[in-house]
Each structure stands twice: as structure tokens, then as C-alpha cells.
Length: 265
Image 1 (tube, rainbow, N blue to C red):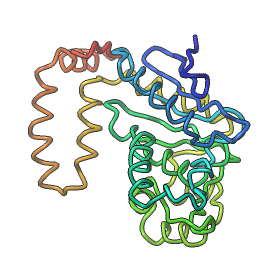
Image 2 (cartoon, rainbow, N blue to C red):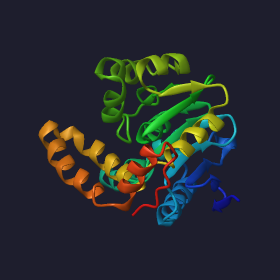
Image 3 (cartoon, helix red, strand yellow):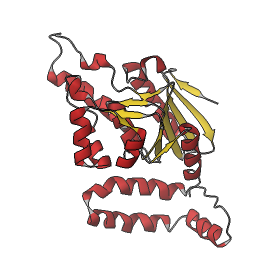
């Protein structure tokens, strides 16, 4: 059964261990309004507090995934109270709220069901895996709105697709169709029925050993520090998993040619 976070964001449980978060303002193409941001944080708090959550899927209601930041955030007018410092103090929490998938302790998948613009692209990039509908398209037209890119765009795009293609997206602002996004590595797969496809992948991931999956996500985040940092992390994280009951279950299941039943301990 679906629950709501102020109605702007819906949370449901489509399968055991899987939580679906739906941005639910299709009338504004799921723009990141102040209302949506509060509801988003509440939804993430809810799924994180739920000890049974093993995988999260994020999608958009209606025909768009996310059209990015609400334009009123960009156009602050000439109010004398609007200063660079005050805008910065407002933007940083906004960025961090929407990039929280990077910090969540379990895998987060994006089911990109349609148009994805600006900060919406960054939200998709904050997810561990991205699946796109055949009609999905991606664009980062920040400079054609008169503003610099935000929400980690200048880091997340090069990380995902390389510097040259990131430059193309940021400088031209052009739309990248799903097939091209797949070729670039911006998305993992393209599917006609993207949400059912993504949920099927999520259900598969939910069957993995949860402690090992969580440590793997942390290890991937730390890998930017280089090989030696990764070796140091793995030399600690792998022994942690070797002391769990899940390790014994995984080996027994492999030997008995059956699906494992991991309990997260």
C-alpha cells in the first residue's frame, strides 16, 4: 500500500525489500519545489528508518521524471534581501537533500520515465543505476537559463560519461535521447516498460546479502580516493562480511544449488 509524504512524494512497497518513491507533481513535471523537497526528505527518512528496506527505486509521476529546480529558485528578482551568501545558504541544503541517494546505505535505482532536465539529471546521476524509457531524454540547459550548473552537475556528469561528453551537455544544453544516453553510459539500460523493468532488477538486488551490499556501496563511494584507499577499505570490509551468518548461508545455498535466504546478520 502506498503512503504519502505530503502527497508530493509517494512511497510504496511493490515487492519484499523494495521501496518505490514516486515524485508526484506531474502538473509541474515534478519540479523540485520547496514543497517537493520537504516531501522528498520525509520519504527518504521513512525508507531509511525501515530496517526491511534493501533497495529503493525512484521514478516520476506522469510523463516526466523531473524537470529540475523550480524556476522561482533561479529568478529571485531584485529584492535587496537577496544576497549571494543567502542564496548559497539556501542552495547547499537543497543540493544535499536531492543528492541523498549517494549517501543512503542501500542501492538506489532510477526509473527515468520521461523528460529529465537540469537538476533532474543530477538526481538520476545520484542513483546507483539508471534505467530509461525509450522516450526518455536528458538535458542540462543551465547556461541557457542564465545560470551556472548546480547540484553537482560539473562532477556527476564527468564521472558518468566522461569530460568531453559532459562538456557537450553543459555547453550545448541539447537533449540526449535514451539510445544515445545508453551509448554514453548515462543510463544502464533502456526499456519500453521502464518501471516494471526497474522493479524487476530491484527485486533481484533485494535478494543480495544486505550487509555486503551496503558495504559495497560505501566502497564504491570511497574508490575515488584511488586504488590504495580501496584496498584498505576492502581489507576491512571483506573480513566484516566473513563474520556474518549471511556468508555461511550464501556458501550453503551455492553448494545446494538453491536461492540464498539472507537475514542481514
